[in-house]
Length: 597
Image (cartoon, rainbow, N blue to C red; front, side, top):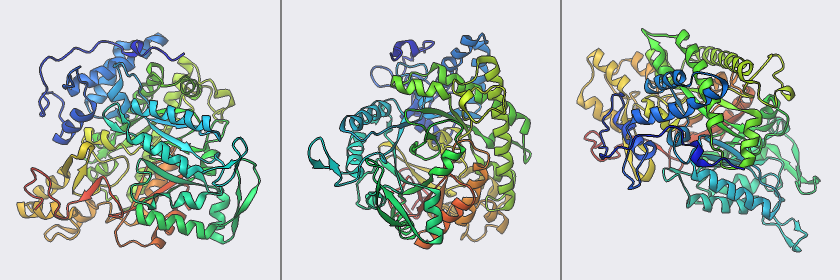
């Protein structure tokens, strides 16, 4: 039986009688964009819908609730409440959005990532749909594999009719998502995958070519090693009917890869996940079929996972990374995320059971690009690649050691004896590391997203309910002021172009240091992803940004390089190919922006 949500509220939160203004009164230093996002999505509201807490209250609510798990194991809950509060208030670590939104409140659901099975029957399909609705309602994102569904026009013996196929059923999930706003604060997000050997794979690849179709889905082709080899060397793969397990034709792999690249060039979808590589690296029995919506969290059917990210930009002092503090943060963050598992209110019993069996967590990073700038290292450099690998190797080892200690203190995850982790005497969590996109939590932290480069030095971000926020890099402003080259004219030009690459008066070394996403060669994007993936248990969320002038062949080169370098998946986005969240200035006017033209 699912635990009563009332038991998940934790310590009570003091009600605020006064209305909280847009400029939230607080002693935590936050950007205006961070305050706007917090007020719109995260801060608790009273029964009238008025904001009823400050950011400091929010962090206190989260720390108090999560630290309650410590008392279950004889620990000092109040001591860890203070420690958790310190790293969140200092913006050194933030958990995924559902934890910030729901911890200590009646909703109580704290995980971001879920994968749901879709069985080849009408009841199975609609069971998955119901589960999706419940998860979206409490702030989670869902992934599905539709590979078990029989192909279009296949026989349905129960009715004597024919099947409509996976893509038609995906429409139902898409429409349902469209009318459910997550907890009233987040729009639902889905991932759909289909094995490359499914008979309907070409229809799936082209599914999002029609404008407005499957807008609430990211879609990814689950590509096997056999397919990747055939695509590179030439040849066919066999298509398999999942209902019968029998061959249902052949697919020219090179032509299929070309179709994937063409559709991704046109609109960003589909992405690719290298499904055999994911399963080979997975430490548990069972077959992974899909991931969460952004692709970084492969999960078994009915599993969930909670994520958190360390802000690397906060660890730079005098141009050097504080490795000692990083080790401390990793240890505390692993403990925090493991505690979340115990105080979480899962939306369904089967998800709770599966999640408790593996106790997966996903610790990652944000602020990587900002960290590089503070260390005077260009994102587009060999040194950046070396540092990416060194940092993730360090985090991975420290996270494993922290999980092993928790395993000795609290007991290993139940499936430990069946796992590939027997080189350790104990282990609390089946997986410990994931690189998430950190979209909104990086805004709260005031840093760059995940491991992405700066998208631009000035850009417009489209957020919930049509709001548009102008973001200008304070690091570039500071560097230009220090050189004595900053002016209102330069700021106006920056707001229009988004990059310093073509702005006269900016020295070459600053242009190289402040290189932006579209200035960086696609190969470097992939190599950065691969460097982090080498020491990440789960997967890495990373977009390979392509200029508007990129070709389909450029996309194919990215796919092949990603596979060659050991990535678990790959996503490309050609600027301007469809609606997007981030836009370069290009003269677009933002309300209240005197520099946007």
